[in-house]
Image: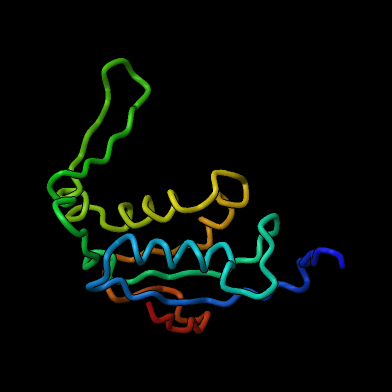
Length: 142
């Protein structure tokens, strides 16, 4: 018995909408990462790019459980000496909730070219409106 190798012609990409309102950020991110990689499909192969497009709406209404809102920090370095920037997730969720959700999903994808390619199929919006109505996305229940 041989291993199934999906060809690019076998892969059909569909659009899904995830509503993050009232859901924990980790649950939304895990489900989005599964859809982006294509692990929900029967012809999934870890070496092939067979994921779908994902639209996340209401990212500003995503929940962080426990004391993560006060204690969790986002840090990045600018490249200059002594320029380590630190922002609390409370401020980050008020100013850039899309970035916080994207960062959670990026951490759940593989750190390879497939992971970076699948991240380009992610669209995150803070509100309930999105610009991909022409693609006729399907609602995905969390």
